[in-house]
Image (spheres, rainbow, N blue to C red):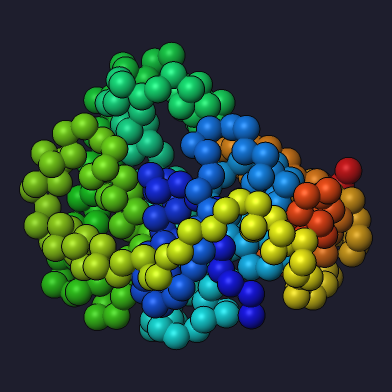
Length: 305
């Protein structure tokens, strides 16, 4: 099996989700540090332009979106499970809350309470976070604080019965999903200590999740990751589900795949997989060679070219 490579940067909240999976599962992985802002030519060679962070690479297979990454890591490394108590479906539904309703006001606070952010990061995030009105961001801060705190208190209430983790006594993906906005809060939101101080159960639980660690990390140059992609054929098999929409698509159809929330940059390729759970396209790049790029089905638009 090829090594796990994570293309990320250390301050990314979504990359922290994947690093915590590595810790929970005790995995070794290779780290490729990517730029905080566009352009990202080495990563684009692998993904075809996917805008979000992180991206996981295993040989010639390129995995986009933390939901798809979690699915793949669970399949390849099933123990310890991310889904104790048969919580797989619940966890992916829970992600729709944590990735949007919880994370988005937190991201606004991260940008709105950090006046010293470099200009290039501010410009990049204005283009990226299409759900955010940067012209009125300062005026929105009281509302954003109210919404982010409401979700913090939801987590406190989820832990009110004294359980160790959100799903019970065994840690899992539910905990990582709930934790990553808290991690962002501690590192990026001015006044985070005041926000978190009244929440003792949340704070104790957050310490337990942080203790998962990040597994065994080694550094890798971007050029070496590209060489691995060129030298390693994808292991992905084709599947086009008969009842998957859009129904006119077939294996090999030229398509674009685009996130439906933000970072809406289409990735073009030829369809290899289209099911109710995942999408995969093949593409060829002069630097990366022949690769297969993977996405979750939920949250992504597939359109014929």
